[in-house]
Length: 203
Ligand SMILES: C[S@@+](CC[C@H](N)C(=O)[O-])C[C@H]1O[C@@H](n2cnc3c(N)ncnc32)[C@H](O)[C@@H]1O
Image (cartoon, rainbow, N blue to C red; front, side, top):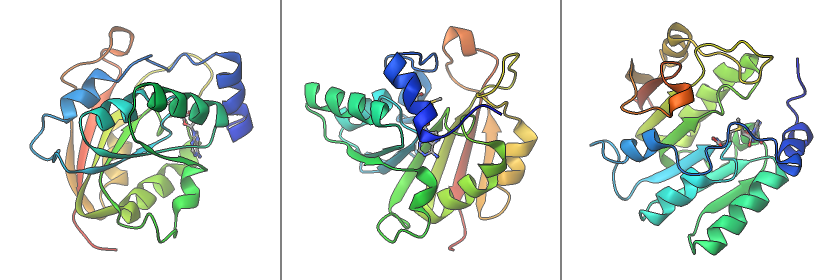
């Protein structure tokens, strides 16, 4: 398997080889903000936030946004962009999994938005990711995921996603469903799906 360490991800940012980067906010995430469950006062967490286009777009809409990424190159670009656009984002340069059992983050977030983090981590860590998401969400908080890619003919990452797998990961402690995106960027059309899950049970 390819190296998935922070150093390896950082090399991509240093070399400017970041094919996942949309160079602007993901249109489906902007669609999420119109949903009834997306409250205007929501405290939002973005795991694996990259250069922070989504984080900054959400902050500019008045949301309280926290972004986590362990690659210093991604964080540098995020902070630079936030400064230029005069937006305030809470930025955490650390391994997302290190938030586990960190009392500061426990039940702190109303919404976790997933885009291209689930497919970037070792698939063996997926169950831990969703367990941790449950810990970080407030009661009745939402996990809103855009799961990509359902197919991939190149060496991963991205690791492929599957509807049944996602549903089974959210069986405990969540209620929700898989549905189709309102909008996908052209090269990803037909290769992604949404999973919107509400935290139902306390820890
Ligand atoms: C495919 S990129 C997606 C970035 C961003 N979501 C976007 O769409 O541009 C995956 C990101 O997750 C970060 N990442 C991977 N594993 C991580 C981990 N365990 N903790 C924190 N960040 C991680 C990488 O540094 C990278 O920025």
